[in-house]
Image (cartoon, rainbow, N blue to C red):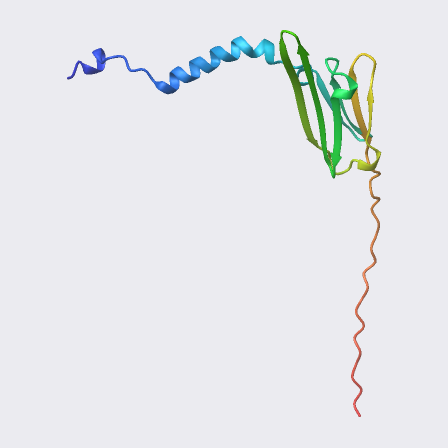
Length: 145
């Protein structure tokens, strides 16, 4: 029986040290890195409409961009602030694939005075089912001559 298992030297894991350091950095910088759209967004997807609501009160209307490419909706905000003492920049980006039953031609957005961005699109009307008649193939008989 070996006493090595009981008295082996402490081994430090480089990976363990890295994970501990990353967790420490995350706790220190998390309050600085938070931007309101990630914390206060709401998505509604029901039978009548698809809607997304974001709190973008930290951004001016000219700092926001909304693009629609096919069914891909992109929402971006970027703000730069330069002062005599420094420079700061904050930004956010959301990319959302709209459901297939959304009328992409009717997507509309609205920015309220208190900084709530609302993007809505109605759903397409469901295609009504119909009965399809079955046609029979006509078989011609060859006449004997």
